[in-house]
Image (cartoon, rainbow, N blue to C red; front, side, top):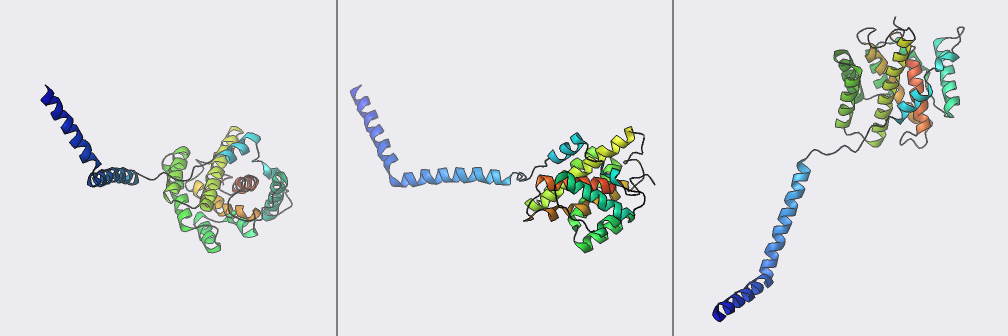
Amino acid sequence: MEKHYNFLKIKKMNIIKILRKPQLSVILASLVLFVSCSQYDTIEEQPAQSKHTFNYELYNDIISKNKTRFDVVKKSNLTDIENDKLILKAINDEFNTDLVVPDDYFRLKNRTAEEIFDISLAKGWATNDEITIIKKFADDVESSDFKNAISNMENNILTLNPSKKEFAKYNLLVNSLKVIKHDSAAKVDAGGPILVTLAPGCWLQAAAVVLAGTSFALNCISPAVVLVFPCALSTASLLVATTNFHNCMEGL
């Protein structure tokens, strides 16, 4: 019994000596490092999470306070552009902003969607990526419905991995389209035409006008880095009011 005990004692001491060897420490450390690196490799292989999240505070604020009816300032003895400028002034007064929009933008209402895209590209109001997003959105509205089209649009935007400034513009675009949809539904309830079923390409024209208008949102911010809420609010309201004057929106 005593011999067996001494044998176990000697064996234990030998194990301790082995564990204390520097070579074993290096081996164990290497093993831990290998396992750790393997874990990080697994993480890197997983799809990266988007750094952006769509925010609908702008949409919620506009529809909750019914700020989509700025067309009441129109006067029958004025031209379309003069009336659009009255709307712009009313919006800037409402939100205490200084949004500046050129006359060329107001003239877009008399253009086709493709003409609007060409003008927007030439004037730097839109990029090819943004136009592709809009065209896909319009196709989805006609083949499915607005809700699905917006969801697909958001996913397509996130796939582009836009910069913070680019995403702010996209977020304004999505919010504005949602407000237009809400406003058109309100007009239906009041006995007016429904935007979605007017004619093929109606949403394409509307979204083309809205896309062009988002480029002016940064005009009322200095420095122009990201959209501040009042500026985004005034821009969205202008886009909704302007788009509602479009022939397609009027059901013509």
